Length: 195
Image 1: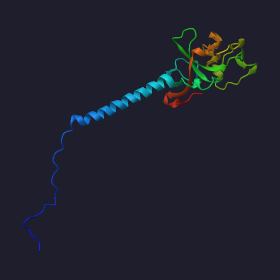
Image 2 (image 1 turned 120 degrees about the vertical axis):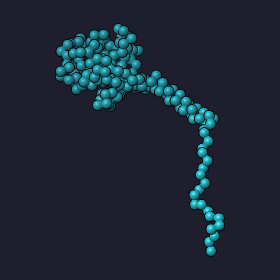
Image 3 (image 1 turned 30 degrees about the vertical axis):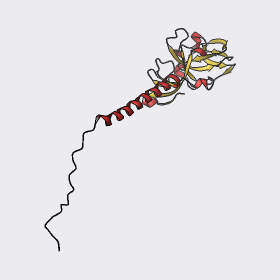
Image 4 (image 1 turned 30 degrees about the horizontal axis):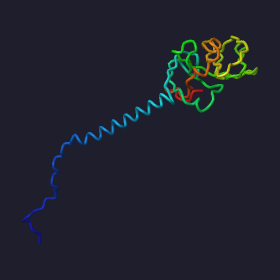
């Protein structure tokens, strides 16, 4: 037989209102957040100073591969691990005004004989094929046979008739070179490895 003298409610007792968070519980969260922010900034600074640097291309001398105002990353560490090679796109301080930076393609390394005959480039007396130079960008200028000096590189822009390069200021000493163009990130449709 059931009794109804002391009915039991099916409802749970209501929880008391939560206590407001104390400042002592907010402080560890803020400390962790600041620690993570400082670590992220330190890592970013390390990467930018020693490894990769974002650069904005100014000018049309490397078209069609690199357009004016395109953004790329320059690897500043790679040439400590491997030599500069023909075909590399390098960033260097302009020898006639080191406050400016130029970006060009390496055509010849130290000891190479470079000659240009009506636009055709010869390296060590062999014509080179340059599929990165479009017919509309070719230049018919000639350049006398030159030996690239030690620790220097002969560089040309891909847009030959619009480029100020080693034909004008001579080979670039390795001391002026500070990185290799490796990756384009803006505009989005050109994102990818620089070739």
